[in-house]
Amino acid sequence: MPYARNSDLPAPVRSHLPAPAQRIYREAFNHAWAEYSDREPGRVEEIAHRVAWAAVKRRYRKVGRDWVPG
Image (cartoon, rainbow, N blue to C red):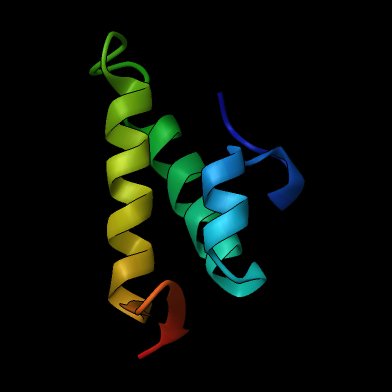
């Protein structure tokens, strides 16, 4: 299910990522959901989460417990 707002994201995503990274996650997730929903209906949620994390990791890196731009 696509996410309309950052507040709709899963709790682990909201609690670990800063707001700009949450936006990246949400937009990437929603795009992947639209892209794969017809081709991989049984795996669309898994794929969308993987795509979203990959998008975040392109712009952010984890330092200790925090995600920082980089």
